[in-house]
Amino acid sequence: MLFDASSIEQVASGFDFTEGPIWHPGEKSVIFSDILGNSIYRWSETDGVTTLRRNSYMANGNAYDRQGRIITCEHATSRLTRTDFANSGEREVLASHFEGKELNSPNDVVVKSDGAIYFTDPVSGRSAGFGVPRQAELPFSGVYRLEPESGALTLLIDDFAKPNGLCFSPDESLLYVNDTIRQYIRVFDVLADGRVGNGRLFANLTGNKPGVADGMKIDQAGNLYSCGPGGIHIFNQSGDLLGIIETPEVAANFVFGDDDLQTLYITATTSLYRLRVNMPGIATF
Image 1 (cartoon, rainbow, N blue to C red):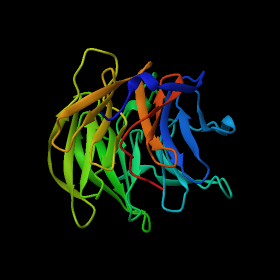
Image 2: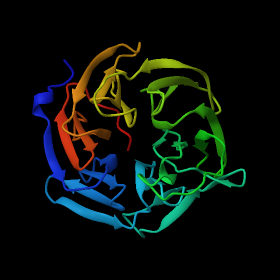
Image 3: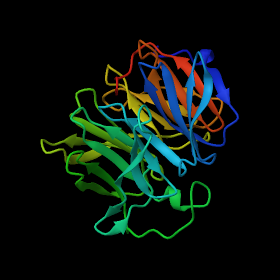
Image 4: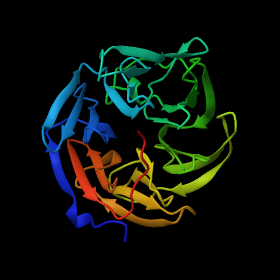
């Protein structure tokens, strides 16, 4: 058994819509967004919740780059930005347009070991419920790769209805991307140049309880965890469902944390939860 759902614990609450958790091993802290609260927070066992940034531009997904700077998806600006909170705290825009048109609203982001940045770009942040209402300029919702040195932005996939969560396999030979509207996960081969190919269906997210395809992560055994109806769905490498972690509130995202990477920190609507699991996750920083 990969988990004991009865041990899930609420560690912080009182937010509007939590998302984008990332674990800092040195600080032993979780940084996460409150999209509708327009803030980014830090939580640690010793300090509890502290505010990292007010007016976060309705930040959603976050990731650490190889230097420990935080890359953030912003709904209100349709930008992908990077902030070095440990030093200057200045915010740098990494991507805002594709072929002269504004990005839709960057949603979730991962960083490959070579520093390349991959992110999804649905239209969620252009709606009243999750961002600032405005017309999209691009006719598709894409998945992109950003070259960190040159800043070159490459469109990898353009046929998702609403691309959302994404993650790499442990050896980074595969990229998984899910679709909130179609409620499925697709997997792609990662090519030598960083592009992707051979896309195919990996798994469907089914169930009658609240929740949609959203944040995704993978553990060291290659089991894939994805938010979905009722909580967090866990699949083996063949796409077979191993179980569902039922969460007290609708889960949007999560991250493996603690020294052994065997605690799931889960952002679920108004709260941050944690749950011990039996298989460690993959270190991302």
